[in-house]
Length: 156
Image 1: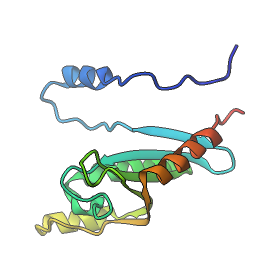
Image 2 (image 1 turned 90 degrees about the horizontal axis):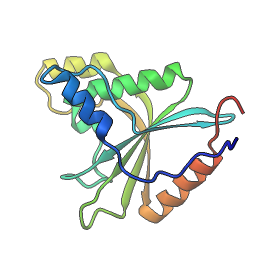
Image 3 (image 1 turned 180 degrees about the vertical axis):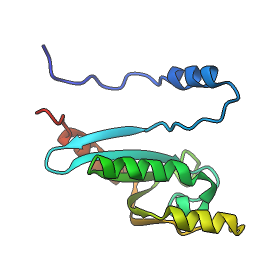
Image 4 (image 1 turned 120 degrees about the vertical axis):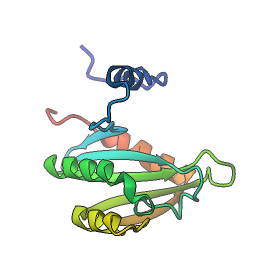
């Protein structure tokens, strides 16, 4: 029996389509997670990839979109329960921005602040505290491949 994982071979969005079919017009209270890695000695790392269509990836930050706070708060809470880390990755497919990747290490999510800011009508809230690292695509690819190679399983 092989312990190796297979490479990703195709994009499969059918599970999301199925959830949409099941829920219909119901408001969803679930979130999807882009990927999770286990690094021996470091723990779990949850990755959420944030596609930037209208804002430069180096300039964008979830604080610009406080209406979406529940997703980031839930992911951060999960990372704490796993005694791990939440990493957000800004990227773009837009010409001129394809080579810009910003990695955001989430240090804290202040739920009471974003709720207060939203209730007072603010469209921007500094409710997510991050440490950021800007990279080009080549550097990020190298970093991500190395992380992927370092990853394993908690039972190993």
